[in-house]
Length: 437
Image 1 (spheres, rainbow, N blue to C red):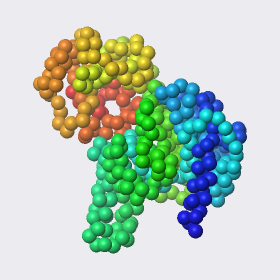
Image 2: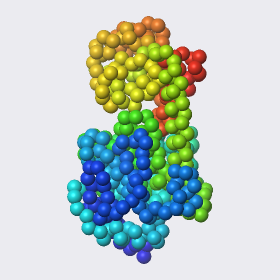
Image 3: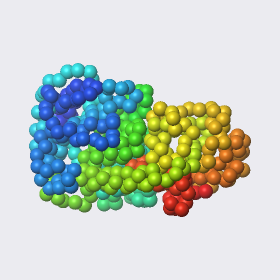
Image 4: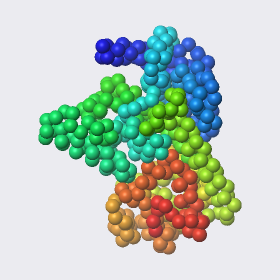
């Protein structure tokens, strides 16, 4: 009976994939009216709540606030005026089942794009991205992380602990032949799903996730075997937002997907992580704007270069990229601050070194395990010595194999802004959290 129900709902949800996805305003069904959640910074995300009643969760008074379903549109960062993905979030339960059936019967037309219906809260997910794992811990829904990719690159102790628990549980089952062995431990474990570029499909199938969170890429051509699993793929395009606070604001969407752990509140929305995500963003925004205002009162700071050479190319942030904006908000100088690009710039080493005398501070990231010396850097590329920062010893590095740099800064731009303020204006303004000289 349960398998029959799953099949019926799967057929109904498949009809929703044919719904319209157009640039600009997008509707669920036949132009149903809804309340659009105003995004202050995020440009790629539109959230519309349908059938909302009661008080708004933005006021952190979500005791009576509920909505029948929500429509989330993710704009395509690589093709203006089109959508990358469309999500229909429908709460679990009888009323949600009826809503699925009602929406499936509506006729729509227009340009097709991938549409997924996600039944919320998602209680089992495979998360391919370390920063999103960290965010889920901060929102209090870490138990929904049941599988991860690129485990070796995740600097979250509890994730590694739960992954080890999964391996140990699997070993006990194999040795004892007892399928039920360690079931309690298994409920708290995290499965290692391999590389995000080539995930272990069999493990993901066994995991039975209700959603998969991953990073989309331009011209990726889809997700191969993952697309055939009929599991909603949450395309986390937040990293393509040009503003630091724009990326952080995506937590409002992620909060709508999950519920708080160990919690049995009165209403579905009160159980969700949405209010926590909203309040967390408010704190981040307040601190960021405070630091920005303080930095604006300082004299113009030192010039900072944030990357190092990769092969024959030296990738640096565009002037309107997230890092470019962070440097500007830190009142630091940047050799490409007049550039108008919001992504990375692929420069030749000669182009960078031509401006080398203008670089006061060189602060880069690397994945290593041991600090790099100046001698090692010169062995890598002798041209580094042309940077003024190199000869002055103003070199700062962060080892992402041991420091949770990406985990913490992706959705906490205020932390990285503080780092850049210190680098640009001197350590009298505080101690560095990530970079080491």
